[in-house]
Image (cartoon, rainbow, N blue to C red; front, side):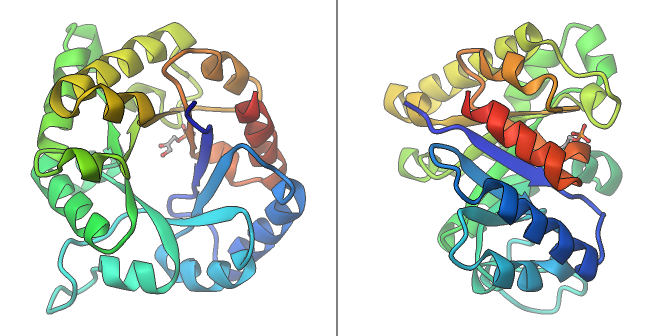
Amino acid sequence: MRRPFIAGNWKMHKTVPQALELVEELRGLVEGEQGVEIAVAPPFVALHPVAQVLRSSVIKLAAQDCFWEEEGAYTGEVSPVMLADVGCAYCIVGHSERRCIFGETSEGVARKARALLNHGISPIVCVGETLEERDRGEALHVVGEQLGGSLASLSAEDMVRVVIAYEPVWAIGTGRTATPQQAQEMHAFIRRWVVEKFGGDVASGLTILYGGSVKPENIRGLMAMDDIDGALVGGASLRATSFAQIVQGGKG
Ligand code: 13P
């Protein structure tokens, strides 16, 4: 049985005082929860202060991105060593906003995933097609290519610590969520892909999150699908009450 996993991606939202207020409220709402993995991904500058609030909490800390080198002359970058130091258990890599706005490639995502695993952090590897790609009937092909490129350097042992997030670009921040059936179709494709590359044991243990306009109202329908193990939540993770409701829905 895979444990449900609900993660909040705060993107470029919340100053440090706002982040602390949110996480303190959230802690009060979800602290007793069992049987569900919960994580929040604040902006870099809030990671350390949020980590202090989350000490001995069930809520895990995640980063939104990283660079693959450990240290050096890479102005503006943050390394997996630094993320491990502040207590990150997870780090999102390859989010479509990074791929589309900042030109991130699957090759770069693969290097980041490798570096994170070397430092004990589980990568949450994001994949997903644009609306044009879906309309052209290329969604499965595009996601297959992203998986191949992003997970290229990993072994089956590595994959046990990887989380995959399917986030169709057309559903992110648009209010237009994929239907549970559309999401399930892609999640099943992703799991089959992982069976072929890494074997059935890895695939059956793999956590695959759905992301894209997840809300308290649609989480249960998504979670009812066989291959949807949780959610990567953007906008609805910015309020403690709605994120806590999604956690509740995620528990089933
Ligand atoms: P929304 O939930 O705001 O659509 O964002 C999804 C997302 O991109 C999470 O990483």
